[in-house]
Length: 132
Image 1 (cartoon, rainbow, N blue to C red):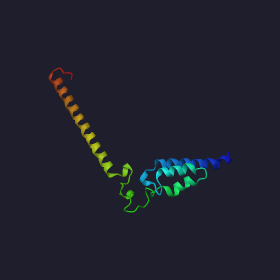
Image 2: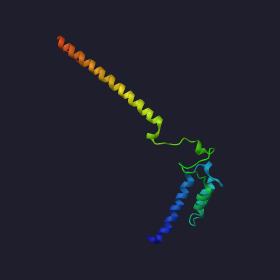
Image 3: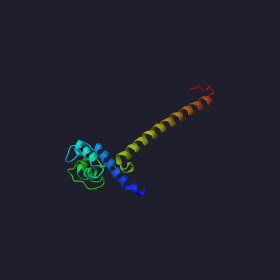
Image 4: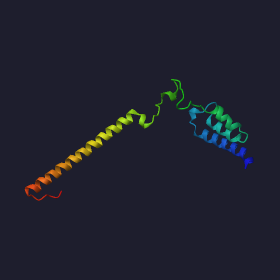
């Protein structure tokens, strides 16, 4: 089993580099056209030259999401994702929705209470309640 490990690692690296190259947008590919990188990865995959070359030189790498970015980089202009409980806009929308639901529930309760009071008044006055 251990003797197959190097072959499996080379195969995994080759497959990863190939799929990564195919999924990378054309504008993020450096040096050569994307088609040429695919050919290099396929032809030199067994000796690791193609996949390693792609991973080192073929793709523009970005800083981690939480890492520092320069002000002019495209990633710095993107809005940063925050957890819902840390997002004030999301929390405000929840409060608004909760207030709307509470208002509707209160109106329904008031309508139900009026209907019951009317029913009781009719019974006390001797009228038959009308089913509605």
